[in-house]
Image (cartoon, rainbow, N blue to C red; front, top):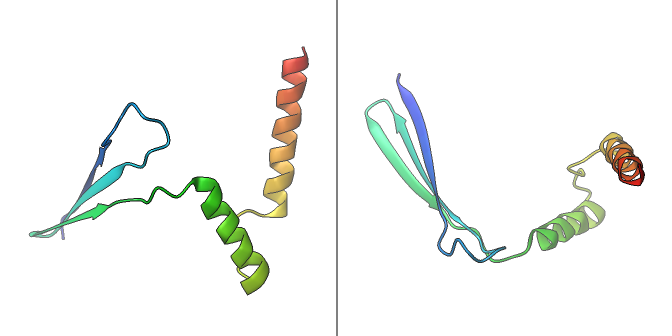
Length: 86
C-alpha cells in the first residue's frame, strides 16, 4: 500500500509575533486522499505548560520531562553562563 504525507503552514499575519499558524495536512493512503486542517488557539504556550503542570499535581499525570532532563537543562544553563562570563 502506497502512503504519502504532506503539510503546509499558513501564516495569516506573518509580521505579528506570537500569533498562531494554521497547519493544512494532506495524506494519501493507497488511492484515497485525506485532508485536514489544524487551527491552534491564541492561548499562550506558558498557559498550556501551567495547565499541564496543574494536571500533574492534581490528577497524577506523568510529567513530560524527567528529573534527569531538569539536571541536564541546569548543566546547559551553567555552561551558557560560564561562556557569557568569559
